[in-house]
Amino acid sequence: MEKFYDVVVIGAGPAGLAVASEISKKLKVLIIDGKKEIKETPRSWFIPKFMCDDGNADEIIPYTYNGVRRFLADTFSGVTNKAWESTLDGGYLFVKEHEVLKFWAEKVLKNGSSVELDCSYLDHTVITYREDVPPVEIHTTKGNVSCKMIVDASGHDSMILKKYHLDQPYYWWSVYGMIKNHKNGIPENMKVGDYMMWQTFQNTNPDEEESLNGGRPVFEYEVFDEKTSFPLLLFLRKEKISKEIMKNYFTEIMNESKVLANYKDTEIIEEKWGWYPSGGLSQNIAEDHVVFAGDSACWTTPCGWGFAFIVKNYKNFSKAVITAFENKKFKKDDLDELFKLKTAYKFQILFNKIATRTLSLGNTKIIDKLLEFFDKLGFIYCEKTFTLSLTKKDIEHLIINLFKEIDMELIKEIFDRDDIEWMLEEIKDGVEDKVSELFKGLFKKGE
Image (tube, rainbow, N blue to C red; front, side):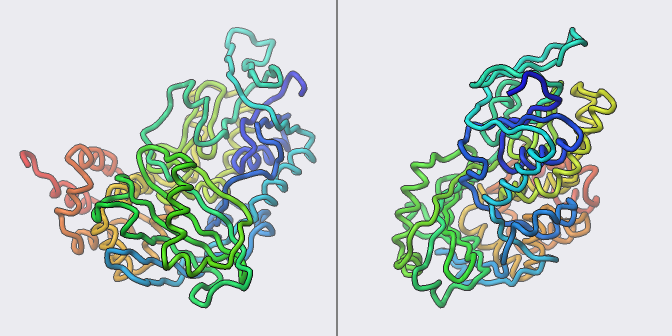
């Protein structure tokens, strides 16, 4: 490594590599990551096509294929074998994760910048009293380097967030699964493009009414092509679930009769796992000479679709980095103002938090009611909820109809008075007054 750079990017995942591939066109960049190979990732992604369009990111389309065509749900508590055709414009594309990481890294190198693997961030110091030296010194396992700005793209367990005590009270999607090869082709009841988004089993928790936050996992699968699928297990809780615990649950569920029948003649291609933050009210974080991208900035949706938000935002984010250098704006207040992203409008991020809590804290009755509600109202509203593409008018329509369908007592099982108070505060400048009045009616003083 050289001693001086304009920007040091911590993390060679999709957020770090995508941003570096853009800012390295104008700035001298170093990416550091502890992994051994640039294409290495334990994650798998699919992406709503419209987010590629919004982010002017058609360059990644060659690294996608097929995609989700049909959403499925099958719960032990009542919603059986539901299926909805994808209706969102452009659909959803499966991503060739190893190839897209390599593509972005090659762009960085072609632009004359550097990638240093097997090199981990340890700490950094910001020096503000010397104009003749780069103000940030970064300590790594391969020595020290200096720069003018850090882009923290180190992910869900960011040491830099902890350094600044910026940990937020997120909910966490904990995910574990295996990409499988069906030796004799996928079974007849599975189709290419299927996404089983919500399947539950009675024996994974002794309490039939338990929520995801209480410990009940959800089983999912995606069908990539005629011979390949991706079964996975997920939890949505206030804390992360260890890989070991998830793997044990996964092994148990793979022996369930419905699952076992689909996976008898299969072999493991690749193990997958990860932790995704969701439900944050802010996706824009900065400190002096430090900005955050990807999971460390909660670039995500209620379903933990962080890759989609990276694709939607990395070019605009990169322009902001370059503008900061052009105007010599590196203080927190300047960066907060500069790094306004197109991740979502305020009311959409609020709805993200509401949806995340509902999915996590809602018991089996509530989840079944929600699935039936979207089936009745139109599945497009479910798709727009989980891609944060709802308009104000959509949210008004959604909430008003939801309150007609779902008993208020079920709502109160999820949200207490404090929840309603912050929702009212955040919703003031968001959706229409009539929605605010509905929220106010949920909890009257003294109840």
